[in-house]
Length: 179
Image 1 (cartoon, rainbow, N blue to C red):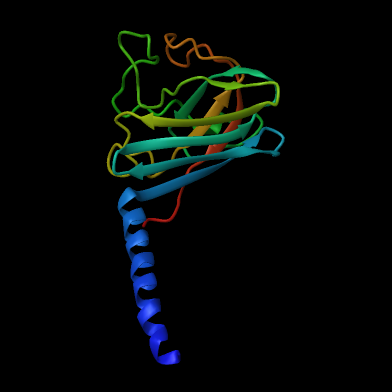
Image 2 (image 1 turned 90 degrees about the vertical axis):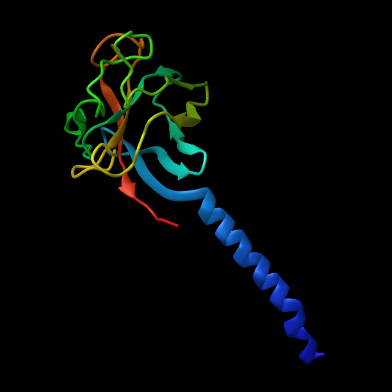
């Protein structure tokens, strides 16, 4: 019986190798940000994935209350409490104005509002337009980047921040595993 075992194992190993190389072709870069509140408590995780069909942001977070919140990519990879101003302005490598409804916008840091229901959970999968992770105009430049959730909804037009209020949740993007 033992002499036939390699005949059965080789096709299984070959199929595992094919699955791994297919997955590597689908996702070439993943960066993550552990999200925290001003008091340092955990608030969730944001992931940006470079895939064959674009760059995607995935978010799984816990809001402080039910409601709608503005969310942006910020230019500096620092989240110092209590106000997270260390994350700098919105990430805006093309120097556009703020907001999807602003005729002079939108910049690369503009993201959709997120909603938290009665359970205060926020989940999102969003395709980012014109976002590059590395290089001269990449999010992961010399000082990195951050994801910030604001206390109020973004109005999608007021420059520079969408009138979205204080920064209440922040996370620094770190390079993950390149496949």
